[in-house]
View 1 (cartoon, rainbow, N blue to C red):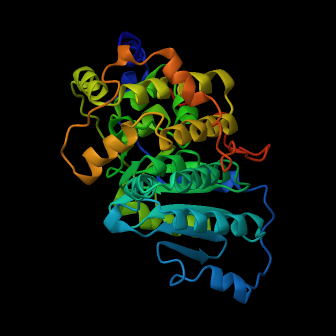
View 2 (spheres, rainbow, N blue to C red; view 1 turned 60 degrees about the vertical axis):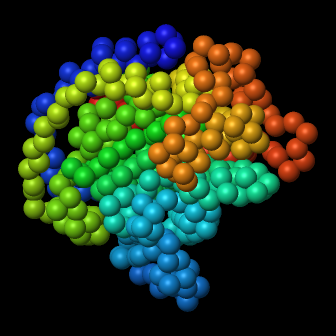
View 3 (cartoon, one colour; view 1 turned 135 degrees about the vertical axis):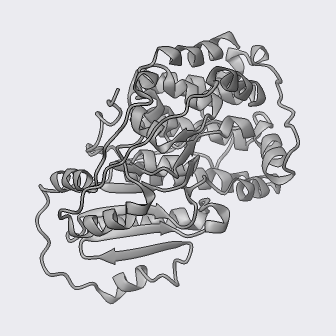
Length: 395
């Protein structure tokens, strides 16, 4: 456990806390001007007539779990499962992949906005649904789900045009994968971010090893190992967010983005409340799956070494497939205890960090053998990633 705790304790030296408590003044005009500069090299759209097929593809009734809207040169994808905190289903992921492909090739589209209905942007994937399928003998469905989800994350990261994620509420798990790989990540005073997957027997995936490894110091390890929640202003300080606005001003911001023009400036002041984070970190680590913690620590260190998003997502997929095939049972134990039965303390196997050997962890980084339907995640090589590598350089 010393290795894991050492990574968390080093956060004390991170400049993140040096900045907390300072006041910030972020205005809508600044956000819009930055977006305007980002898209300035695209040709101004000509008159464009949307075909009947395109209109059908954007029909709200057809895609009720993801609402697609278009206004002028802006496209919106609105996650619409507020009762489930917009958790992602296989169908939602498929719809977004399809429509983002349309938006990327449409010469009149300048920018895409991702947002969620209700009190969440997205609280992750439909874990309970995946567990039910795999428990009933359909592990390949779980593999297909994560293959498609990671492909969507890569699509957003390599998108040819700016993608703006508006994070006005919960952002967790798969929702973090969608938003942290977008060009602009706008947070509010209602934003709550976390990657607590280790607490249900899995690990922070969806590219978390990539974007956490790009946070200065060891703060990324701390977030992934403890599942600690961050507020919007904390995300801004460590670079996970690019802009902060008050939730009451989001409508004004979106109106400005629609026109990419000037808007009324708004001053935002916010303060950070410090807590006993060290004890909370130790408590979180002790309650999480020891195997998941060591898998994630290996993933983030590999990510820092390779600095390659495509490889990070491939590593995520390989490891999650081993979990789905029950290389160990922690994911199903944690999912049942925390999400289905609710309130029961998971019984992890092995139960202690020191019982998880290097050889055990190595298995999750090997290809799946003796499985005809399995293949490594193959993503196209792209030179895009226009908003990398300087995303997380605020500290």
